[in-house]
Image 1: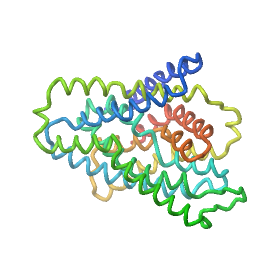
Image 2: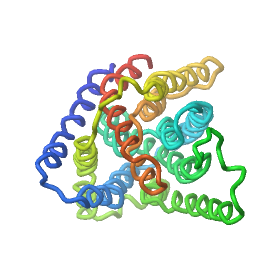
Image 3: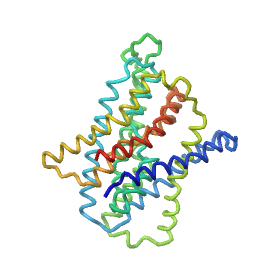
Length: 337
C-alpha cells in the first residue's frame, strides 16, 4: 500500500486551509490578537483533546511496544538534528543564526504533523496518532530546554563576529539557568504532555469503558478543530510575509536543504540501518517518525523569536517558505521510505 497519494492530497488540503487566514488578514477582518487567541484554543483545548482520544482504546501490548520504539527514535532524531544545526550557520547574522538553528531542529510536528497522521495513517494503523503524541513529548522537552538555550545564548551583541556567552555576568548566567529550568517545567506541564500522560493511564488501565459517551463525543468535536484552525493561524502569518530578496539568502537555502531533504533522509537511513542489524522497526513507526521529521519548520519559532528578541519577521518568512516547500518534500520522503 502506498501512502504517497494520500500524503500529497492531505498536505495540499492543509495548504488550502491556509487560504481563509490569508484572505482574512489581507481584508483586515482580524485584530492583532485574533491569531494568538486561535493558537491558544488549539494548544490548550483542541490539540490535547486529539491527543487524549488517541489513547482511548483497549490495551494492546504491540501498541505499547511501538510507543517505546517511537520514544527512542524521537530522542535519536532530535539529538541528531541538534548536533547538525548547532554545527551550521556560523557565518549567519546573530539573530538569523539562532532562529535558523531553531527551525532546523524543530518541525511543525504538532500543528501540522498530528492531524496529518490522524487522517492518513490512523485508519490503517490504529495507534498512529498516539505514536505522534509520544514523538511530541520529546519535541516539547527539547523545545523548552535546548530551544530556550539557543534563543538566549550564543549571542553576538556587539556585532564583532564573536559570541558573547563567555563574558556573561553572574546575573545573566543565573537568569539563563532559571529560564532553562522554567522551560523544562513548561515542557512537563505542556497541555499535550499532560493529555498524553492521562491518555496513557486510560490506555493501560481498564478505564476507557467507563468514559461517558457525551464526553467522548465532545472531545471528538474539539479534536476536529485542530487541522483547520492550525492552518488558519499559519495563513494569517503567511499574509504578512515579504519574500523580497529570498533568492539572495544562502543561509535560507542551507536551512531548506537540511530541514526538508538531508535530515529526513538521515532519519530514513537510521531506520534502514536498524533493520539491517536486526532491529525490526515496525512500518507504522517508520512512517510516523519520517512524516514528523520531514514536517516544515515549527510555527512556534515565531513565538520564540518575539519572546527572546530575535528577528520575528525573518523567522516568519522561514516558516512560511518551509511550509510551502513541504508540500513537495514530505511526499518525497514517504516515497523514499
